[in-house]
Length: 309
Image (cartoon, rainbow, N blue to C red; front, side, top):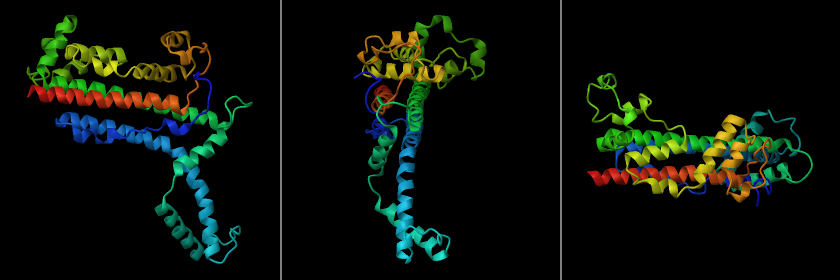
């Protein structure tokens, strides 16, 4: 199905695999654990952002029910709001709301159904006001998840080179035109045994501004041993291009983006100047790719370091 067709299915944008929350405890080295914890915190914040509109929909409807129940228990007509400020009724509001909170429920699925009704049929006339807001949330999720992966990849590479000077040697062999100077070294007390990665990054000898930069940095430092991590995440490439499209062009497709998407049948009908429509499944696949590749990269580098000890 082309990306311009189908339902929004907002609920599909959420991560079904929450294993990222446990990745820190599965690692051996403390510096990698700290990077994993930051990665998890970013993804937790992203998930909270994703759930916010769903929670607001759910609780706005629940609050109306809570008020009606509280009035009824106080002997007041459920539709009569004239005494809502009376202390006994206000207290009953709190009591019933607490009961509803403890009881929980399937609020996300309920809210997703309500949201689907608000969005309407994609092929129908007019543009419901909620549609642009939902797509803005989905775009923000893609951008935030890729930023989380990009940050993880950069921080992990630096930490690995700080820990293993052989990785810095491998990288230097492939980048003879980017050698550090005596002036660079003097700022680190002439000892790079625990700061080679930091120096290379701070002196801008290395860049992590594109996925290609990231892949090349890892391939050169680890002599291709971790290339499979990126090869097993082809969706990450689309996630990066989508992130750039929304960050730099507000989601309006240009010929460059269309050329980059060649070979992917979902984008076959894309036209320059049109807005890229995001749905829950599309955004969810991008978020999952960023998350999965981040987890895989953490595990692979941690295992490699463990094998060196």
